Length: 68
Image (cartoon, rainbow, N blue to C red; front, side, top):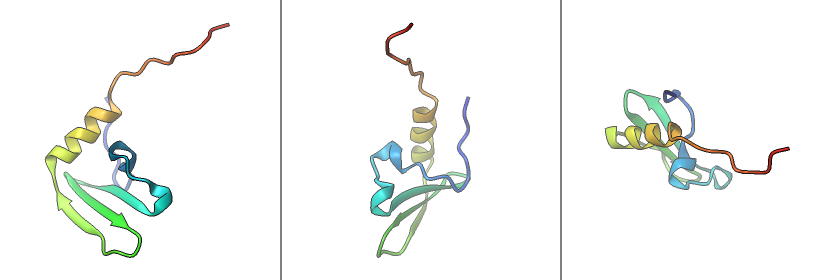
């Protein structure tokens, strides 16, 4: 099982676009920091957010394609 990494941007889980300066960074202990260009960062403790990201990064995926 994969674990959340401190200081990693998990914005992609929520459709947040890092190319536009938007980030959702895991700070540890269910603490998240949302950043967006031109705005002050917002920090929040949220177990639901941590669980959603944990579920997303650990979901089973199957590679589809042609073999051979």
